[in-house]
Every structure is written in C-alpha cells, then in structure tokens.
Image 1: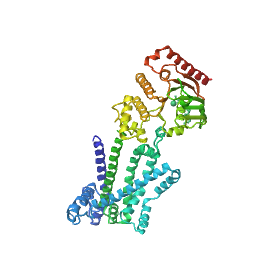
Image 2: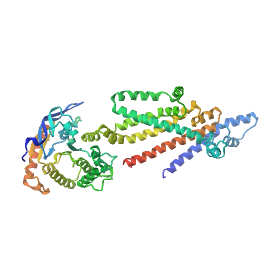
Image 3: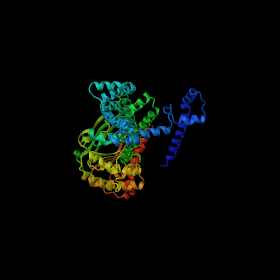
Image 4: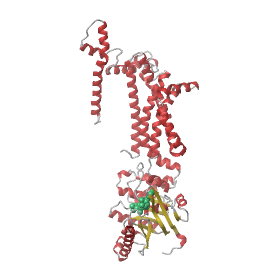
Length: 297
Length: 265
Ligand SMILES: Nc1ncnc2c1ncn2[C@@H]1O[C@H](COP(=O)(O)OP(=O)(O)OP(=O)(O)O)[C@@H](O)[C@H]1O
Ligand SMILES: [Mg+2]
C-alpha cells in the first residue's frame, strides 16, 4: 500500500487538469447562448455553467461519475426495466451492456488464447509452419480491425452465425497474436544445457514439452495474456459497433449519434474499468502461478 | 586389476572431433584412444580448452565424433543413451529453477517412470548422500552455488545408472566440503561399483579419487599420458601425504607441463 500515495497524487492531478480543461472546452456554447439572448455573461457564471451542461463538449468528472452511478445502481434498483423490478438486467444499464461486452470478450479471449497456443506449438515443432505461419500472423495484424470487423460479421451472418460468436471471433482475431509471439518465444526459451539434460534422460518429446518447454514459457505466456485480454476487449467493442445488439460499443455509438457525450464518457470509463479488472485478474493468476514455480519471489 | 577385455565399458579408438566454426575448424579431440573398464574411476585432467568436456559429451551422445569409433557398453553412444546407461553431471548445476530441489531430483525418475513411492524414497536417499536432507522443498535460488552443484549430483545419482559422467562437479566448492564429498564419492563408488568418468582441474583430487588418470593437452585436444594408479581402493584422506601419492601427483604435473610447453611452441 506504500505506492498508494504516488498513484493518488497522479489521479488528483489528472482530475484537476480535467476540471480546468472543462471550462474553455464548454465556454463557447455558454457565450453563444448569452449572445443569442443579447446578454453578457460573467466569467464566474461561465465556470458554474460549464460544469453542468446537458450536452457538454467535455463533460466534467462528476457528471461522468453521476451518469455511471445512475446507469448502474440507480437504473437497476429503481428503473422500470431494472433488475429489482423486472428480475432481469435493464438494457439501459451499463451493467447489462458491460456484461454483454464481458461475455464476448471472455469467449474471444479463450478462443484467441487457445488458437495462439496451438499455433505457437505448431511453429516451434513444425518446420513448415515455422516458415509459413508467422508472416501471415503479422499480416493479419496490419489490417485495421475496424475495416475487417463488418466483413467478418456479414460473412458469419450469411452462414447463420450471429449473436455472441462473431464478436468473439473478432476479439480472438486481435488476442491470438500476442499469445503466438510470446508463446513461441517462451517455448524456445530453454537453454542448451536444459535441453541436453533431457537428452541424457532420453526423454520423450511429450516429456520435453510438459516438463521443460511449457514451464519455461509461463512467464512469456502471462505477459502475452495481459496484452491479449485487453486486445480482446477492444475487438469486442469494435465488433459491437455494426451489430447493435448491446454492449459498451453500442453505448459509445448511440451516445455519439445523439450527442450524449456524458453517456459516451461513462461507457468509456466502464470499458476502462473492465479492462483494468481483467488485466488485474490475469496479473493475479500470474503472480500465483509464478510464485508456485519459485519465480519472481 | 584383473579385467578381461569384455568388461570394457567405454572404448574409444582414434576418436576425433572437429568443430566447424566461423573462424575455421577447431580440433577439440584428436586421435583419442582410451579404454575404460567396468568399475574404474577415471579422471580427466588438463588445461582449459583441451577437450575434457567435449570427450565426456561425446560419450554421452551429446556431441557426434567426426573420426574414429566409440562404444559405450558395447553399443553406440546413441543406443547407450537411449538405454539410459549413464548419469551426467554438467559443469554448471543446471537445476530447473521452477522446480524445487526435490522436484529436480525427481525429474529423471518421473521421466523414467518410477512409482511415486519409489521417487520419494530415492529422492530422500540421494539428498542424504549429498548432505542436503531438509532442503527438498527449497527452490534452487535459495541454495548456495555449491549446494546447487551437490543437488545436481544427487539428481544424476537418483536413477542409479551404471556409468556416472561428471564434469568438474566439485569445482565450485570450498576445500573442506570438497574433501568430504570426495570421500563420499569414493564410498559410493566402492559400494555401487559404478564406472565413473570425472573431469577436474585439481591434481590432488584426480590422484585421490582415480584408478586411472588421463592427462590431456590442447590444440588439438589429445591424451598425453594415461596413469594407472597403484593406490589401494581403500583411501583415507591422509593417503595424500604418502610418498606414493606425491609421486603420482608429480607425474601428472609433469604431463600437464609437457602439454603446456608443446602448446606454447
Ligand atoms: N559447440 C562448440 N562449437 C565450437 N567449438 C567448441 C564447441 N564446444 C567446444 N568447443 C571448442 O572445443 C575446445 C574444447 O572445449 P571443451 O569445452 O571440451 O574444453 P574443456 O577441456 O572442457 O575446458 P574447461 O576446462 O575450460 O572446461 C575448445 O577450444 C572450445 O572452444
Ligand atoms: Mg569443460
């Protein structure tokens, strides 16, 4: 907890900067309003007004926090469609949309990680794959996902796959790559002597894999998983934009359709919190696993 | 010793190994002819780079000779390795850092399919032998370099191969511990009748332990002298003060010096 103070200092500094920025960003609208009324407006009035506009260019932090509170706890417990009254999550709440995003993210992450690990094993053990897979994996990542996502969805839709799967595929598409890169490096990490030792035991390929290559790859794998799960979340949100069936991506898009900047920012923060939570969970599993392996004491 | 030719365990005839490197060929071994009989304790001594490690690795089928013939237990080195004929102690401990000391010692036992109970029993026994009882659950980084080296010896002893190949196993240890482990190694050897190939830089160590001392010299790596030790099999530590011991040590030193002079020319 001794690093709480520096973190807190940074957070306070960012909030202060944010509040300061809110004033000039939102002031023109206040001045316009005043001009249309043929009025003068005092600076102190501008400051108070810019903090609480309905559709600010840059919402103030407390507006975002209030929106997040309203669209989670308040909506679910007091809203007509909320969980408290209807028994199911409200489609207006960030909890509902967060859950839609989270489930596709997790499914995509699992698919991406699984595919990444399998590809890495193939690359390490098969000469032909070593020569051929990596260039394609790299090319795959140079195509902007925003251009690819609608195509994936259309193609999958046309063969009758819709719902969570297309979004998960897009998420997997982004998250498999760091896993491949990290895992290939990890599986190749054993040094010559560690491999020689296995050879003196005349160990089988399966033994060399499970007792040597897999353990040495663990630190690399976890570093990749942290990147991968964040990439998976980004992929899911991008995949939600054309589908319009819920999710934080939809909240972002509909917010910008209707100029609901506060809603956009609230969804943005929800996504950030989700990402931080996911990366944090992976980090926790990482620490546990590596500690059990005697690494990073 | 009265040994019939059939009891030879390792037989090298005109063995050569040339590494092709970017700076041209390196003759790590040239015309090495040597017979090691069952139950012998053979030390390899010589200056750095004379091919001691390379020879041991060739026996272990970790390097392929480029000339001559080599048999281990009457088989090719590769067949012998697949038959798990030897235990190998590397020049550096090389414990797997993600396994505990116990886990490292059980590694060969797991691979060779020993039962859980047997693994446990053997692990405890060899840890006792290298005086590391109680360190089973520690990770390698929690041990000193010398302790790690002892653990790696325990690992090689755990599965009881008939041949033990050791590359400077005691190089990192202090004199006192070294003496004690030398004694322990001799006892183990007498009890188990293993055939031991042992690389060292220490003349007293080589003379104290060996029934046969192989003196090597570099560029190209070759054997300059093979000394059959007349010392009895029973060797208390103070045998090192006997005249016989001093004479053998002297001959080893002469052999080493000759190798150096030649190389300098
Ligand atoms: N893989 C390799 N590739 C190229 N040259 C090598 C290789 N391994 C060893 N050598 C060379 O072969 C020679 C013998 O090396 P080796 O390791 O057998 O020496 P050594 O007698 O064990 O020395 P030390 O006492 O320092 O351990 C050296 O000149 C070394 O540079
Ligand atoms: Mg060496």
